[in-house]
Image 1: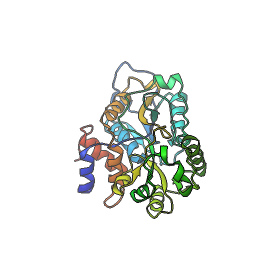
Image 2: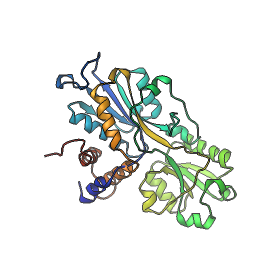
Image 3: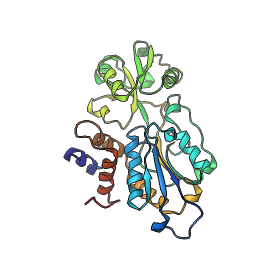
Image 4: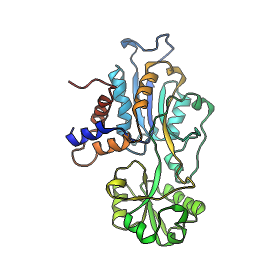
Length: 309
């Protein structure tokens, strides 16, 4: 790991997101709070966070590996990497730990796909009852403009953007369905009728289009370091088009009171509003390291695992 990447991880910790730990090989219950080595579990960690999903998954995966469990992290495109799939896994299996964004203080689930339409799906009582300690990570989308365009249009809040919207175009780095939902939500929530909302392939492409004035509004995670690196203006969202979401772990009942629960809680306790941004810096750009290496450095800096020899 480069000196700059390591320094970024040592300075603090990042926000927002969703991790799923699908645990297999555990049957029955034990009177011991911590399994013995012979009771090591096989764990699959799947992330559904909006930023650095692999690195966020590896935070939990590396901590579990350090405790003697066998852990794999599927590709980011895995079907189980959505909040809906994570919640379903907690309900339908007896061996899943899922880290899911929930609406702040309300306990309602809000998937990235539905956030663009400002709609939320309430979790079942069973899922709510299985929540572990909430992290301080916020997984929220925001609408941004360049500083120059914000000054030119005098737009700093979605509340007062309406008169300027017809001359603006927007984009998201998600599906066309999400783009269309966002356009409708802008109009219904803020009377902001933008000319178009494009669906772009990646966040990098989205940023490039914004900086070159191909689009004037972009939807990005609030924790994306590129917002601050490029001096982008986050437009105020007083009507909560994109509500605050806190990353919260949920654990299947059969795994309550195992060391999976205690390990997850220890990791969650250390995650702050800065963690995802720091992991993003460590795993992207010049001198980038792997998600696993970045996670290991972070866990070591927090005193959660022993340093590699």
